[in-house]
Every structure is written in C-alpha cells, then in structure tokens.
Amino acid sequence: MPPVKAVAAPHNANTRRKRLIPKYEAYLHSRSQRLYGPQRIKAELRERGIADEIIAVVFAEADIDWYANKQQLLQNKFGAQSATDFSTIDFKERAKRLRFLQYRGFSTEFGTDVDL
Image 1 (cartoon, one colour):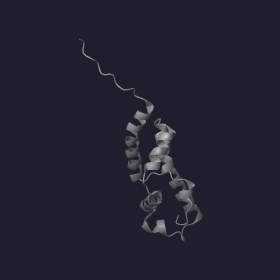
Image 2 (tube, one colour):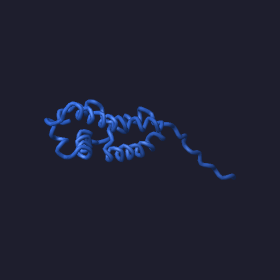
Image 3 (spheres, helix red, strand yellow):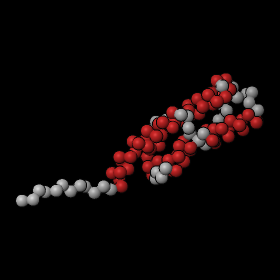
Image 4 (cartoon, helix red, strand yellow):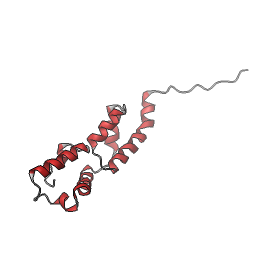
C-alpha cells in the first residue's frame, strides 16, 4: 500500500494576518521608542503595504502613552525647561515646534496642547 501524504490545511488570509501581527506590533513598539508619533508610524506601515485593518488592530492592542512620548521628544529637542515652560514661547517658536511635531508624526491634537 502506498504511503499516505499529509494534506496541508489551506493557508487563508486570516491565518497569515494572525502570524504577522506580532511582527507589526514589534515595529510599532520600536518606532514609538524612537519617539515617532502615531501618524508617521501608520504612514510607514501603509508604505510597506500593510492593510488598514491590520494597522487598526495593531494600534488598538498597543499600550503606548503618546502624550508622554511627545513630552519626551520636546524635552530632547528643545531642552528640559522649554518643554514645560510655555509662557516664554513666542509665535515663531510655537510654530517651529508644531512643525517639528507634525514631521515626527504627532497630529495637531498632540501639538496644540497648552504645554507647547
């Protein structure tokens, strides 16, 4: 009698997505640790061809404090005092910081806080 060949289960899209999500979670964690904002990370994942549904799942499962990341980024770029002392910031400096935050991937909701 000939040997019986094992038939592999069909490899559907849901199985593939479940297998790849940890990879994207690691990417999200890595980029957030480098203080990139959510908008930039989402754009980078889209450029890599990742579906919006997967991106939404990855971000929903992530436990990242974007506000703290923004504060740390401002402190690193503009100094410890300037991230918390907003009374001395003029319009040009505020616009400069807002542009920087947008470049790094933080939306205007993160950039228009009082502590800019």
